[in-house]
Length: 465
Image (tube, rainbow, N blue to C red):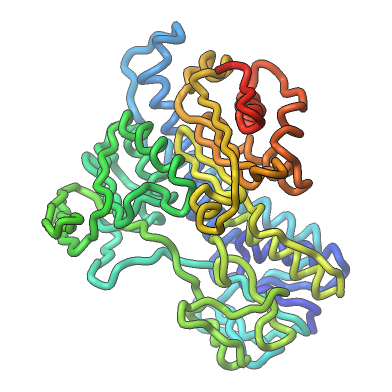
């Protein structure tokens, strides 16, 4: 009998298992795939970042090295080697998770985990052989999978999801991306930098529509420079694949139909919770109409000894959100009183420039009727950004009009994925814009843009613009 069984080994599941083991609980983890790490490590965050980095190196070599005084000849892409390097990065990370399981004495059971009852999980291997394991507490961490539209046939050859996009055998001549969210823009960036034409068809009137609208506008400007075209406020009505050509039909706001033809179509309209084969009903666990596992504020299901975390429950589908929830549940099981502030979980888009945000958007503050002030600072005015030729973008700080407390920070520019952590720390400690503006930031650095935006929010005191 285990103290805890975790079903799923993604960032939420494996972190939950490690924290349980650290707390002295006898722990098992069940994973249906041969490698640990879930979507994030195998076909998500890690491999996409590896390809983004490789393609960015190539793009810089082709477009900016000469300005830096570096001359190259016969520059070409070896896509096969890029994919091989990406696979090596994935293997290093998944091997690292195996090591952590052994180090923390966590038993790994390979196979599909399904409920027999509220304390028993059946583990079924690929060959059909199965065995039952018992657990006092069970954590569901089965994650998510790509969503599609009912009329789209995903042949995984020409009409593909993010998973297939990571393993293409050729650079598309024209990649059509359905969905202007994070995944589509990141993977579109990979191939645009390598020379593909990329067309993005988005139903909403802005890119990355869940983020502050300023970010979507700025990102659109930057991506146009590397060969993107955009069809915003367009509803996809059909996707037809014939041979090596795929045609996407979409309706614009006036009801007119357009056609976009490409050799590959990436369907990236979001992700949906994954509970296939879980047999949750055998344990009496409620699943919502949206396919999510229903949980309370303690991430506890309606069955008291069963919890759920990550993409399979409500909230943003982010690896680091799942990790926080994994730790939260482990500590809750032991009777501790952990806390997660969901408003302070940052979101990042790993395009170039990167986009990063935490807290409220300007649109949310308006909706809530909260009076606020805004401070902005463009990277064009940053000495460090000019030195590295990364002048696209800006930092935008939203602060309470009366108290000056920082309510939201939105960044688009170089290394903002790392810079956003300063904003998270500041907001966790309820800092004011003036607090940040009075802290010394090393010069020259990109982080000075955050200080300057805070100065701009504090009586319009920015020094370098």
